[in-house]
Structure formats: structure tokens, C-alpha cells
Image (cartoon, rainbow, N blue to C red; front, side, top):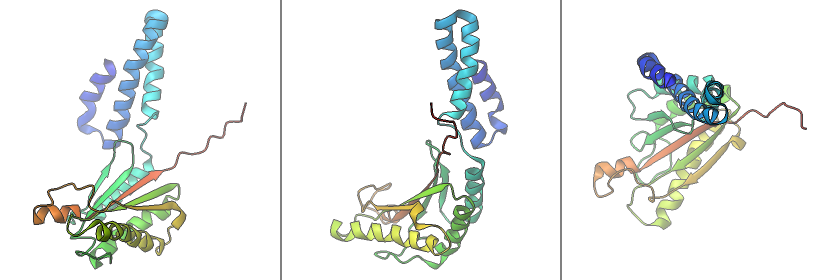
Length: 215
């Protein structure tokens, strides 16, 4: 209850990172209090709330500072370009790059105005080597799967090859192509097809290996 009130009263001044962490703490506190109350009455509820808040803040809601720094850097680099930079619910950094920035129709060659964005993106990856990258290419529904499926993979591969050429280890990068099978807009309109021809880039920070001795 108190965690929920605190979250609501402070949300206006919080960053996105702080809000997600606070949300996790609030959820954990409520769950912990409920479990503690069953186990040990009022004192158990208080202890459970504290433990639950800590677990909630850590489990599934942690957004590392380096990821936040890279997100802000990419937001600045892509301002006004139409590229969407977001933090996903499972704490990945996502870049959604529309075709008017990334690729011409039927092509997998990176456009000149996409280069500076990828330059900045590669810099962020080099400065945070604990991250891995997944690049997914998409097409509109024009043409057949025999054309669209390899085209979507080739678009993802072009992005991979570009950032590898700027110092990112290829072993950190996985690529995939979904062809026309995951549209985000209506393929019956020109505007919809433009949105569907896109590349999505996901960045995840690997969890640090535990240093605790085995028992």
C-alpha cells in the first residue's frame, strides 16, 4: 500500500528506469507482505514486505545504467529520423528502424542516412561489451515468400556486417528474418507497407556470472 502511494506521488519526477524499478519494488512489497502475514502475523508482514520489495526491484525490473546511457545516446542520435528507441518490458533496448531510413524497396543495401545512426549504435556496443544483439529484418507483403524471406534476412545481415565493421564482435550478434509474416500496419496501403519494411534491433545485457562458491 505504502509502496503504491509512494510510486504514484513520485512518478512525475522519476525517469523510466526509476519507475520500472519502483514498480517492481511495489509489487514485491505487496506480495511479500501477504506471504509474511500468513506465515507470521504483523511482524511477518513487515519483514515480508521489505524482502519482497528488494526482490521485486531486482527480479525482472533492473535496467543497468550502461543500458540507460546507450538508450539516451540512441534517442539523441535518432531524434527526428523516425527511428523508435524504447525499453521493452523485459528490459531490452529496442530500435525500430523504418524503411525510409534503412533500406530501399527490394534492397538490402544500407542507405547513407542510416550509417550515422549505426555508427553511434556501434559505439555504444563497443563501450558495453556485456551486451548481445539480435537483429530482425521484415518486409511488406509485396512479392512472394521466396523473395521476402531471404530479403528480410539479408537486411538483418547488412546491419550486422556494418556494426561488425565498426568494431563489434560478430559473436555477440544474432540475425533473423521474418519476411512479411509480422506486419505492424496495413499492407493494403502504401503507408502501411512502408512501416512494415523495417529492421528491429534488440540489445540485451548479459547477467553477470555469480561469484559465490559452489556448495
